[in-house]
Image (cartoon, rainbow, N blue to C red; front, top):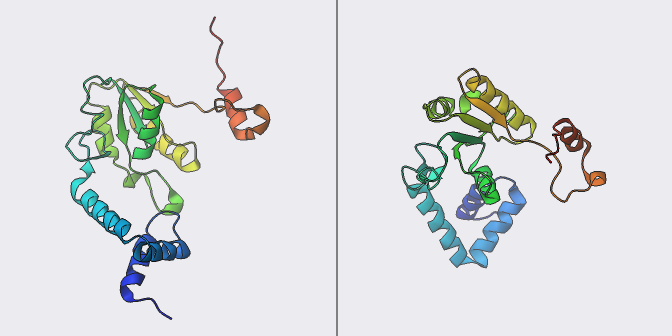
Length: 200
């Protein structure tokens, strides 16, 4: 038995979501059409609204409904400190720590040769203009500690070194509350390598 074309179209559309395979997409489609038609309507309206209202912040490149996002428009933020992250979700995680009061630049991606993404796919010209605007003095590279994130950090370092900026990289180490016997060897080795002095 074949699905009606409109249902097949919905299943195919749901498969664009990361981590959603054919079976998951089919289950979602059946659920939306049979058990939660109100949810399906809300989802359709939300996607349509987001597509028509979201754009990129002119300064940091994250999603925004206005020319400047809330962080960039906040005069209380440090203007001389710029943190580069891969995705808006990374920015949100840093914001949740309440330990950073500078500004951001969101790459909206990373260097990932296996996915066919190279440095040319990143907004490096826009980033260079932002980082070299004469106000920024320190750039924090906060890409992920994955092979792709490290490759991206290398590209950023190459782009911004010798430009009169202080370049820093977020540290790796043990999680708060972590016990040594349960930590993976790579994280433990990095924590030892990046050890620092104890303040009195």
